[in-house]
Length: 340
Image (cartoon, rainbow, N blue to C red; front, side):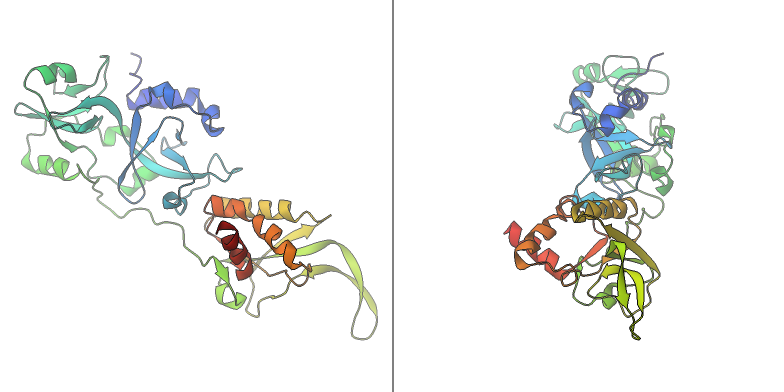
């Protein structure tokens, strides 16, 4: 039997058929008739998006595509690692049905509704509309509306596990019984406003300082020191006047503390913008690391009129809330002046 287009399997199949278009950020919400998709975010709250704003990972996990500051700390590099979009694992929690209960509340799949003396889950089966699912039959919502009405009384989104952000099985939240048990009814009702987890939620990526005046204070064991150097070696005399060759390093403030990891940006024909773009992309791909940029103002001899130009090279970092690059303070000050 072909799954209903608004069921989890139907949405999963639709995503697979339009996967490349989704990754290319084409507008696709019309393919699901502009219905809202509900999900549980990494902070354990309900949120909403539309078809085209997510894809399913290899573990069948719903991956939200976003550049919203609220979510960027939960970015997990996945299938869009060549872009500045953040991809965030969330838990699929139903689709809008276009029905409302007797009190005007929107109904989503995986909601429970009280109909008569029963509390039944809403789901799409083979009917053209969502149904209340009983043990051995189902009741279309339009029929229930005409025969006594119904009220939203809970959701199946309780007893959730953190591992659902890694591997998702819809059957874990698809409960078919009619909820005669008072304790189960209470759990379902309590999950109406906010999902309920049985263990801790995923930890966000670490938050670092955005700028520094003293580079030593932002260097730690996880920090990667970033700097510019020349693409060719220059001939330089040593203390005894003997000549030797070495690269020119454009560094004003190499740390006095131990540096365990370095990332060189090789300057060739003043390709600063491209180098910084690649740095931002690398940082976005590895959100668990902190990248500290050495100051270069004096060594590259940036005139005051060029400060603004250099600062603007970092706009993708600001626009996409990349939070693991620490900049010399003057760069951020230039960006703030531009914003004002």
